[in-house]
Length: 199
Image (tube, rainbow, N blue to C red; front, side):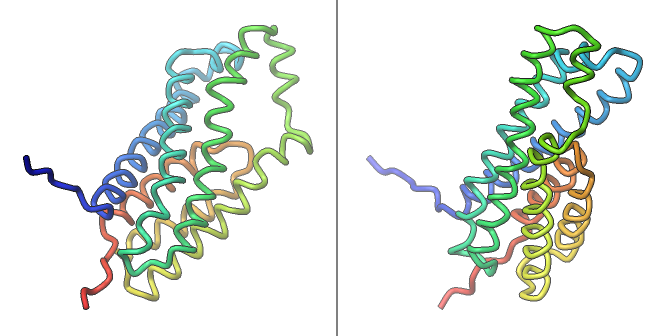
């Protein structure tokens, strides 16, 4: 019986591309939900099934990106350290997405509208939750874009989109816009990344 092993670069590229696209679509669904449910109380929006599912999909997608990105390193022109840093940024994007889909949705079912609104007011401890995501996204996506551009390791468009994602991470308080841009940029990166030349 003959078995065929799929090369790891193909699996890693497929995983990054699929997870990036899924994370971008889920994040876009969250953004559209804000506009479609603008007249509904925040407590109702937080526990709406569509919002919960979109948050969970975004969280899982960025968790897959966190694990899969470093696997692209050994066979591409991108250095493994830059992909690992980008993976770490994706892990910190996954944290608030998963938290909104689980903990926040649970709290929305247990407290009233006014109490839920008070819990969501931005203060210093809440900013500390998103600060690692912001700082790592700026450093990781900016570095990956510059390294990829200088080494001609991926498409120029993917590099530019990674820079835009790094700048978008400054939108403190929400991960969804960053999720759309980072997901698309990383999927584009995986699709266009150039392999290491064979000896």
